[in-house]
Length: 107
Ligand SMILES: [Mg+2]
Image 1: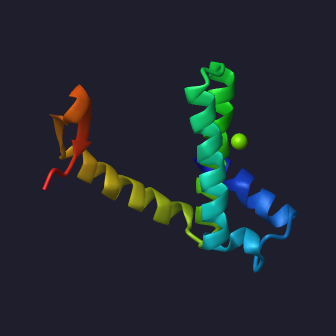
Image 2: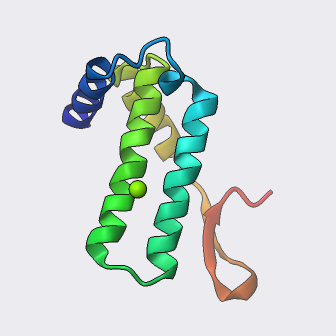
């Protein structure tokens, strides 16, 4: 995670994103939606594993960029990750409509 975080932080610095729309979360949501759409197309159109990997990397880069944009430190990300991980590890897995399975809180 640290190497990826530092790489994306450098990307933000190189293109002077601080204080611009590039670090505005509303703008970043649009980028995420765009990239999610590209991943959806790659999957639904049966594109190669390599293309599906690339679209996932686009999303990962944007997510890491979100952390850089909001000024989250690596320690903060690590702590938030494990907090959430503990939570989801204590969830139940259930069969839902359509025969699919889901891990959720099921209130
Ligand atoms: Mg893409």
